[in-house]
Length: 109
Image (cartoon, rainbow, N blue to C red; front, side):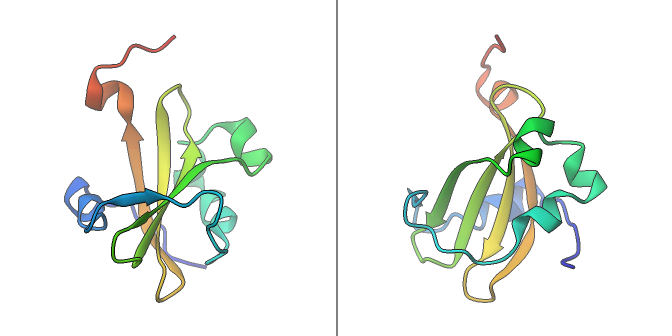
């Protein structure tokens, strides 16, 4: 199993070179993200329903096609756990807790 590792904001941002493109409809299977997501420290951040039903909100790929960001539904509205995968090595490099409420001052409903 891939080592579970929370990425820093700097590490996360470093995987976005060349901009990000939504590839949700065309993304290819890289690795088993669900094994990683079921790890306790990641699972606690996720929507239980989303995890049980293996729901993916979106998949983005950076401009160099080196990294994919797989957005899983978080434990609250506008919150995602972003699984970052290395496309070339076909492995997960870590995850990032993306709280859009905090980042952009959104209000939860």
